[in-house]
Length: 397
Ligand SMILES: *Cc1c(COP(=O)(O)O)cnc(C)c1O
Image 1 (cartoon, rainbow, N blue to C red):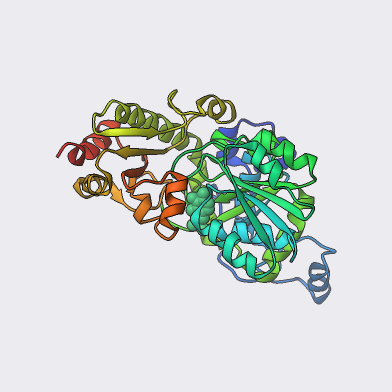
Image 2 (spheres, rainbow, N blue to C red):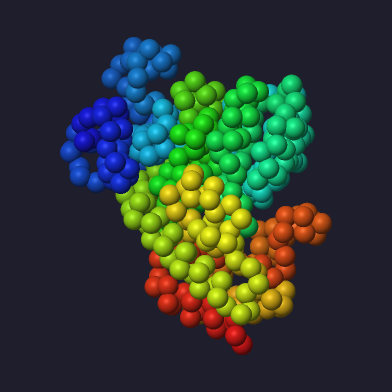
């Protein structure tokens, strides 16, 4: 497979692509992908250097531009998402930054879901505003609000589904149709589902964003991100990255290549474990509400099961008794990690109101439904019974 062209690779099943796509062997014919730790590349001659710099000859120049290990990561993820091209970035946030810096200019307008990652809200609402790019935040779930928010200067729609922490589902195909009608590009942050569970480009999105830091690594080791889409859309984004520099390191790309090889089995296992934990939580007397797209009680269960292959690994739940009870559950755990990170083999637990969503106002938290009794679990790959035992310690003290 490594000897074959990209086009051939696209006919393989997703689990096969996750293991093989993008692999390119060096002169040493290594089995595992090589990690090319070099900042620059040597030319055969002055003429070759000149040809590379003006783009007349393909090839590596400098690792801020391209690096063979990073290229393997990009080609593998592109194959999984069914994208023409992928550019790797230093983090998920630099993927979002590069996407916007490549596509937007002062005076442009973004319509974004209200239920997106906190740093993305800050980037759009505060930092971009200083540069004359305005953002209107709308409901993640009401397609009509997106339509109403469109202005003549709107250039980009941005959403994340399922949302964090309440697992709201945005109708990707529905919002893509509105975007298309108005000549606006739709970007979807696919961090929670990964291409194993959801492929936004097939549903009409133009751009897919990843924080590779989460499930693509899967073991909480390094930061990285990616932007995917057509060559045409990606060209100015790549130019921004190459010039400004928030690109992925070869070391991190190598970690992600190894992580992606197990992505399919991990996502299936995360989803199965999360469904079991969510079903168990629903039967607990001290739990008022459970948010999980894989549960029939989820208000958008049907849409979720239409656009996702499974519910994913994130479960949120509200305990009776507010912050005191929520914190007691956290502090009573012995195995589960108390951390806001997610997408790890280890189960993690956080109290959104005082961590990930602490910096927004009480009003905004209330409007978003992030109560003092809300907890978010990123269900890991431990035995479900052990996860339940750990949660039950504080649930019934
Ligand atoms: C973590 C996260 C990001 C940001 O990614 P970093 O790699 O931390 O920069 C963006 N979107 C979502 C949904 C995330 O969970």
